[in-house]
Image (cartoon, rainbow, N blue to C red; front, top):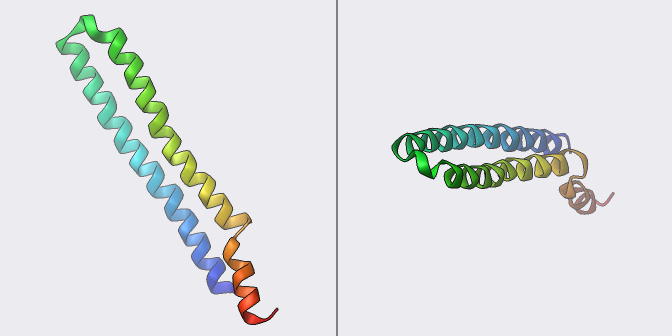
Length: 89
C-alpha cells in the first residue's frame, strides 16, 4: 500500500514537473518565432498575435490537464480501491 502511494506521488511530481518543462520550452519557441515573424513582416503583427495567443492558451491547457491528473492520483487514487479489493480488505 505504501509503495503504491509512493509511486503515485512520484507520478504526480513527474506529471507536474515535465508538464511545466514542456510548457516553458513551448512558450520559448512560440515567443521566439512570433518575434522573428513580426520583425520580418510588421504588417502581419495583429494576425500573428491573435494566433500566438490561441496557441499559448492551448499550450497552457496541456499542463493544466497534467496538474488535474496529478491531483486525481494524489487525492482520489483509483488504484487504491483495486489494491484493497485484491488484498481482500
